[in-house]
Length: 484
Image 1 (cartoon, rainbow, N blue to C red):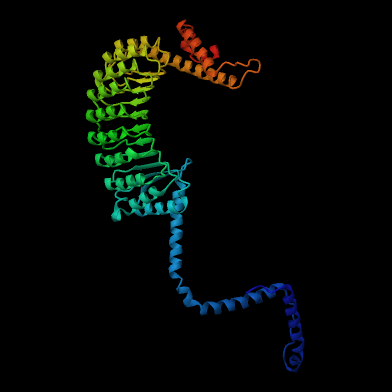
Image 2: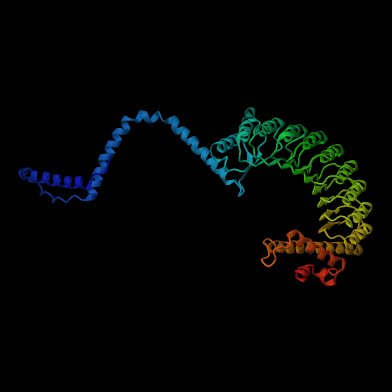
């Protein structure tokens, strides 16, 4: 009921006063009655109370008449309540979105995965750049794989997700088949990073995704770490990588790949032209597999980072890598930590470091390199100008003489690091100086030429041993102040 206007309130006051004047004669006829009280003037508050009572009475009547109608809305009310519950769940999803737009969710139940798929489909798919899920056991396979199918449908149509990750020991191969087919069927997919980690995929599962890699043109990073991939699955994967032209990084650390699978990788790398980083940490690669990969580095001009930590390639396999470094001009990081390597291979690496001008990190730690190998490497570092990190902590030696060689190696690495800093800073400064033509000289020197001259002068200083002083060895940072 609407509130009365000021005009109607005034009219009501007048009618009340008139009514009291007409009732006075009646009061006079009554005998032995107390005198009538003086009537108070009605206030605005009194009018509001009267209006409220009238409105309440009207509402009560309306409610009684429509009681049965209210019952008919029970379904809609229940639906609204369910919607509110979903909104609460969706709010929880929102709290797990990282600053880069990646949604990270752990320990999800089947119904929560279904809610997630619905939420992404309805309102949030364009705002999420990645989905990283760790599900409860069997969550994706319950009720006839309902959750997996709904999530796969989302992947099949989504055009904004760039990172997709699953890590759970209970995800089975049929689940992966749904996801693989969804990626393959989406011509507008933008997925660049695919992670299937932590004991979540075996040989059968990786064969399913290998088929995707044959045709996919968006994935650049493939993380299959901490799984159960053996030679059989590795062969299927590496066969697909022969044709793939987009993957640049592949992580297979902590799997069960042996020499057979490693040889398949080597054959693939003879053809593949995009893979730059490979992580094979913690597999079961021995001498033959190591030799196959070492031989590839003699011809492959793409790989820049190769990690083979905690395998067992031995001296025979390591020597092939060392020989490859004499001609390879692209690899910058080679890590052979804990690979049963001794002085025999260390000496060949020392010879390679006198020639190689591109490698910056070499890890030979956790092996059996003695004073003999350490001395050879320390001597090689006197002429090497690119290595900034050379590690050789040994299981075999710990004496003062050995520590002295380690100190020499570390000092030379520090000097090389400062050299790189000088070159980068000086070249950067010259880039700024030569970015525009010199107004006093119409033929300004090009950035390329200027950087070349700077590099040549720095190398001349090295050969003259002007950087090889006690002052510099004690304080490598002094180089930056001395020559810039």
